[in-house]
Image (cartoon, rainbow, N blue to C red; front, side, top):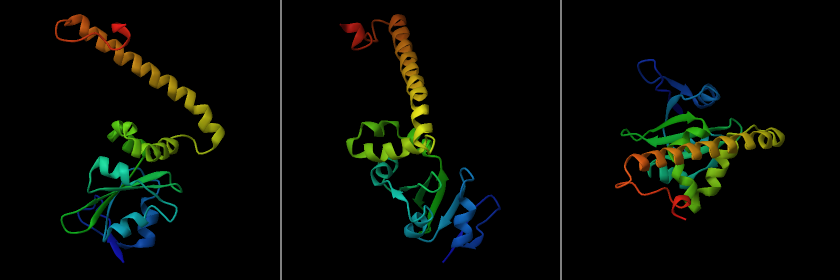
Length: 168
């Protein structure tokens, strides 16, 4: 089965599955076209982890699959012509698109797969990186709380005090 690449060459180019799979690995976001959903998902490899809950949160029509071998996510969307458009994206791209997914119990395991993928592959490197990320996230939360308090100060009649700390 051949698949068109749909890259920035003015039109779809037809190339074989083997060459196509090789051409998209590790090159950031590239868009291609696949004849079927199965063909699209197969580009994530035999070791792929399908992400059905996150897919439904992103868009009920799309399908996401994480490729442990490339540490990338394939994002497949149905096209009007019956084909599937496929983009290879960083795991953080998906996390950024659906930050609220962490609050959906059924999505937590999939969210964790993508969060782990954003860390160094080795356990030692991952555990060394986590405290830095946690500190950054705590600081970001603090900044958002400060902004909320500033807005409350500027308009206390219309903006409630920051819950729950300021209401104790």
